[in-house]
Amino acid sequence: MKKTILSGIQTSGALHLGSYLGAIKNWVALANEYGCYYMLADLHAITVRQDPAALRETTLRQIAQYVACGLDPERNTLFVQSHVRAHAELAWVLGCYTMFGELSRMTQFKDKSAKNAENINAGLFTYPSLMAADILVYKADLVPVGDDQRQHLEITRDIAQRFNGIYGDTFVVPDAYIPKVGARIMSLQEPTAKMSKSDSSPGGCVYLTDSPDVIAKAFKRAVTDSEASVRYDAEAKPGVSNLIEIYSACTGKTAAETETEFSGRGYGDFKKAVGDAVTETFRPIREEAERILADRAYLESVYRTGAEKASAVADATVREVYEKVGFLAK
Ligand code: TYM
Image 1 (cartoon, protein in one colour):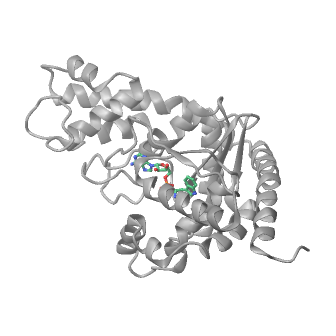
Image 2 (cartoon, helix red, strand yellow):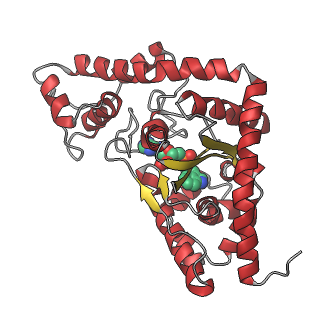
Image 3 (tube, protein in one colour):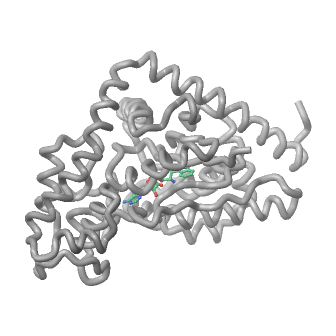
């Protein structure tokens, strides 16, 4: 029997180089060996205020991008989180097995509360219980994510173990799959901060939809240092090290090979090469995503079929959990 993968990306903004290299690229690589559920996390997205029309559009575009990245909907279950009721149902139950103290320690909650001081809502706080439900409802073995989700995976494991300890084996305790290269792509403008869709500095974040021109400009302006030497040292040279990491992830070359390739050459050359590597990685995906996005009937069939397949599995887990906790059967 194939093992199971579940992962997802919030539909709160456009896909970018970080979410591509940290997550999707590995989803595609793992897709043949596992039974895969890849989700569009719209329930999670509304923990931060979203414009309804923009949210719908982003969600549709993201489905097209999943497919364009190489996730074949015939072989992977691609679905929208809110289309599968079991996520919200299990999240409520798991919330009763998640401790206030645990949630208070989540760095993502602390970061997001600081950034959204006017809207520190309960959903932002209980976000990890919903994420645990996403994973545990499919009894996933493996969860491919970037480094910033490590803590959420740990709390998911704790919740699963706690529940299993009380009610007997119910959930699979999942492992995180965090790639060796590309797990933490940094902002091009502020290389000590993670690249993210909420990046406020223009050019800090490179999106899957960006044209080659925009990408070239962003890399040309990328913050480096005054040493003029392409050498990996994340502490002393965060900007250059981030560019090496991006180059390695896009070309498959190691950091050492990259250093050799650019030894004695200036940053101008190097930045151009990194920009080209990203452009060539994104170009086919962008073009294919636009083509797919134009075919709304096809997109609908992808997410409807995905929701049906996902619901069949997820509903069975919720029934099992309801029975274990003692809810009266309907
Ligand atoms: P999200 O939407 O913030 O990011 C999606 C995925 O992309 C990775 N990622 C990065 N990797 C490397 N460098 C970066 N700069 C970078 N930025 C983002 C993230 O680690 C993630 O893998 N809570 C999740 C979404 C989610 C989920 C789930 C994930 C909801 N339910 C269940 C896995 C399983 C999140 O906010 O990811």
